[in-house]
Amino acid sequence: MVQTTDVLLVGAGAMSATLGSMLKQLDPTISITMVERLDKPLQESSDGWNNAGTGHAAYCELNYTPQQQDGSVNVDRAYGINARYEVSLQYWSHLVKLGALPSPEKFINPVPHISFVWGEENVDFLRKRQKALIEHPMFAAMEFTEDPKILMRWMPLIMEGRDPDEKVAATRVAHGTDVNFAAVSRGMIEHLQTQEDFELLLNHSVKDLNQENDGRWNVTIKNEKQNTITMINAAFVFIGAGGAALQLLQKAGIAKGYGGFPVSGQFLVCKKPELVAQHLAKVYGKASVGAPPMSVPHLDTRIIDGEKALLFGPFAGFTTKFLKYGSAWDLFMSIKPDNIWPMMRVGMKNFDLITYLVKEAFQTQKSRMSALREYFPEAKDGDWILHTAGQRVQIIKKCPEHGGKIEFGTEVLHTNDSSLAGLLGASPGASILVPIILEIIEDCFAEQLATEEWQDRIRKIIPSYGISIVSHKDLFMSIRNDTLSTLKLS
Image 1: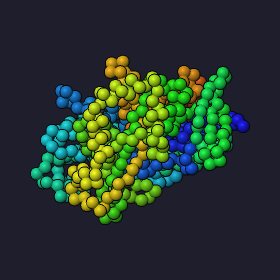
Image 2 (image 1 turned 60 degrees about the vertical axis):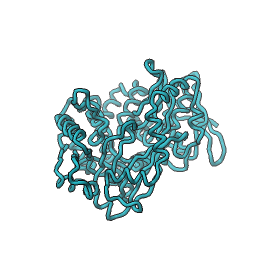
Image 3 (image 1 turned 120 degrees about the horizontal axis):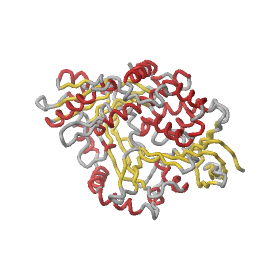
Image 4 (image 1 turned 90 degrees about the horizontal axis):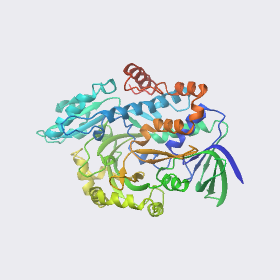
């Protein structure tokens, strides 16, 4: 039996949910099929407890603002990430107004974003960083202080029991966000299920895919419960299957030379009410030497389905799985003749990263608690449990200069005819998922997007579409005021 659909979404995660949601608004007549190998959507990296829930806006992430050799701080990437996150906020605001998402506090909450450092050199860097960032309105609300009384008010758990002679400082943006990406995506999927010509197939996995002469794709789908095979014929295929995307993109022939470097993540979690009540912030520090950007330590407030908790980490480790509920053979199955050399070169060139991951993998609860006490000096062992988060698969690809390199961002790949696209990589990932989805629509639905009808609709959905809100400061402030009000983040 062969089913036909206009769009096939592989993986029921945040990316597929967003693409399906946006395409349905641009063209309500489009037929969409979403397939997911697990028995529920949003069980991998999109799940609330499988990520830190930080709405990455570059308020607190110090690795987005590197210090230059002359001592100055480069803020270009921070401006770019902040602007892209604002696009995500615009879309979520639109969906709230449309009634396609629940009340904002169900999926996003205001949680101050704080950067915290200690030591004279780091304090000087943070001061320079804040001074450079606030030149643009998007960071104008960022406060800097070295005053212990103010710091105690901002983050009492972090300041209690700390050496009063220690040189410390922090910056704070009060309208930072904690996001339950699963709740956002669940709202989108539930809204899609109210639309005509949308189908969600759970317990279905993609086994193979081949392009026909007419450009359409025949995708072999297995019902894991009934052990039956179905063929879906689709005009467009999107592979948003997290770490599993690499192998499917390889099958499609568009990931030549690409490899994957899987990294597992763990967090310490505390749900003790009296402690949770004393900390309302996401407090980010500086990554240790040799550690990847995704390992930046942070002590966070998390709000998932109305429940508040504290989270500290991440603690990285190595695994051969590409998904939390994946196979130990994932890494080995992804190794191909065209990516062996880039992967070997990355291994040889990134020995400090390998050393870091080995060290992390052998950490004990005692050593994890020791790391926590650098941020929360009076933390008690019995108040914290270890939680295993989602998998991250970092991109490895060919590099003319070094033979291979590892990327820590998110990358979109698509076929030459734009009939199939997919995502590889990780952070900042879900925070900028709307700009990523817009990029896919621009690349793969260019003809439709060029029409007056789609242009009118995309600008109603994303008011700043096609305009740089970094350059147009008045437009930026108008949009920010609207999103802060609509999403109740003021």
